[in-house]
Amino acid sequence: MRILVLTNMYPPHHYGGYELSCYDTVERLRAHGHRVTVLTTTLRLPGVADRRDERTGGVRRDLAFYWDDHRLLSPSLPERLKIERANQLALENAISAERPEVVSVWNMGAMSFGLLTTIIEKQIPLVYMVCDDWLLYGPKLDAWSRLFTGRRAIARAVRRLTGVPTSVPELGMSGTFLFVSDVVRQAATKTTPEAARNGSVVYSGIDRRFFPPLAGGRPRRAWRWRLLYAGRLDQRKGIHVALDALSFLPDEATLEIRGRGDSDYLSTLREQAARLGVEGRVRFSDHSGRTDLHKAYMEADVVVFPVLWSEPFGLVPLEAMACGIPVVATGTGGSGEYLRDGANCLLSPPGDATALAKAVRRLASDVELRNRVVEGGLMTAEELDIDALAGTLEAWHRAAAERFQHGRPEERRSPTDRLDDLDRHQQR
Image (cartoon, rainbow, N blue to C red; front, side, top):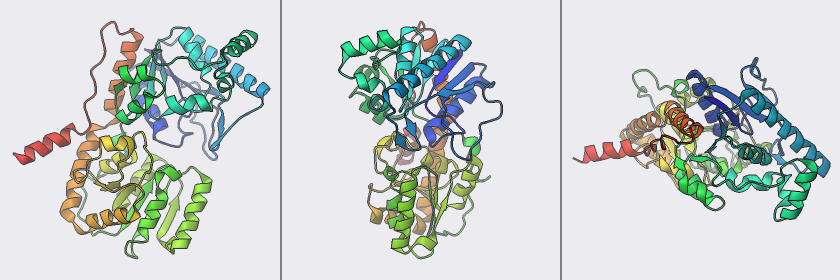
């Protein structure tokens, strides 16, 4: 297949798991013999270099979008028109050069939705891999098309004058929608009920090659009270709750906060640590490659995932599970679809630092409990593997490219089915 991927960020310039899932999937599709071209934005992170020869390797960083360093942009009207025209030209060039049989849409946050209008009008099959709620918020962040919301006559007139799409297309029946979790699918019913009704939940997955447990299983070492948070620095992630929880734990307990993101929130966390008197027990580390992240997991006694919001999925608990490290999480959002209290993690209510600290103490004092959640976590990580996800996505893209002449691919099974099977077996 010839596949054109459209997304707003692409590694090595990325912040979270959405982009990594896209990258991992693209690499596997290419390994399976498909020609995959990525059309993404000009976003570059400070100190991060492009991969060598990536343009000749199929990555086009040609698009502008309405976001810069965690700030939404509202340029002048002439500048918005300039951006839209340049983006349309970049899309036309990519389509002309690659002649895609199917377009794979990942994250459209702060992107030009007119790009989708053009693809739809060209009648190229579309597959949407929806890993967050951009179907809800995305149109509001498109600084061009939102000018014409509810102004159909003006939108038509401006399009005739400029040649640039001016409205957000009706997406519901425009393509095939694949959702990272049922939480995301349910949220999509607010704006695209047809997409949610006809879509499929495919979950996500991690590349377990980067996160292997120690050979022969994790050694039974003494508990050292080493806590780890890994991921984006964002208030919704609840890192401040983990800091509060640290203050309720023994003095030897430490917390490593590993990630990058909102610099203002980082300053707030540093101030909080000082105020709590735990600054000497907290270490802030910049986000790094997956090899270094694996080392951080293996040094931890427990990984905390204290998210407060309805996060679409969450890859960090899976990475920790694959490494054989116990997890304490809130289970909010999509992660609740694969997290099972006492089976592959311990759950604590969101925003409750006391409960989080209590869960960590339970793991510290109960070796049998630790071993049980580690075993269940390894099983869950095996189920939610990137190879399985890529295989599922490959089947859906092929079916879409063939316009479903041979029907729909099989639905992906629930990630907790194996845990349920194990539980039933143990109860016999």
